[in-house]
Image (tube, rainbow, N blue to C red; front, side):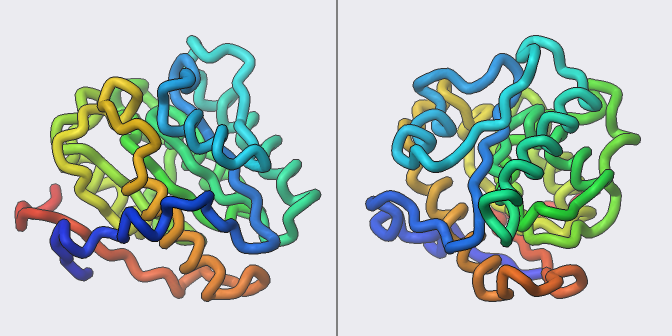
Amino acid sequence: MSTSHPSAEPSIKSVTPPLAVPRGLQILTVPGLHGSGPAHWQSRWEARHPDWQRVEQHDWSRPSLPLWSERVSEGVMRARRVAHGGAVLVAHSFGCLATLRQASLDPIGIAGALLVAPADPDKFGVGALLPTWKLPFPTVLIASRDDPWMAQRTAFSWGALWGSELVDAGAQGHINADSGLDEWPVGLAYLATLLQRIESKGLESDVSGSWESSVELGCTTPYI
């Protein structure tokens, strides 16, 4: 476990141009409840990267984890047809839970995941459906200190189980359109770092057991 300070965040300048996705990988965005509107950072990223794909839900207002995770599965299968290295999932809120549920059922085809402001699984009664073990692919979990959907402390406790790199986003609410992030270049920088880690391990290699979790915190409060 390592600790770094805000000054160690990826450089915003490094992600000013469109993000270069390593060959063999497909980016899939996984929005949360009600989808992501045009002002949401996920939609802004998609606009800059038209080759990215969005996991669409049949009913954005119905948070059904089995149905949502099935759509994630379909998106991953489509991605594997065009990208031999699999899909990198960029998830937000309830979309994180759908991503994690699919990972617990079948992680094949998932190369990595950026988990932003996960919704509290206990609020939806789905905690028992999520993995409680280290995932076989690298993940970065970004949580806000004042997220109304899940306390940062709780988010980091879950992320520690999954072997995620944990990132303190500061006071950014639910890290959505209301947070005023525009294109959220800092988040894009963390995605770029995640892609570099995936590429460095080799798109064809088995990363299970080789991903070490780390923590980026501005405080020393222990997890529960």
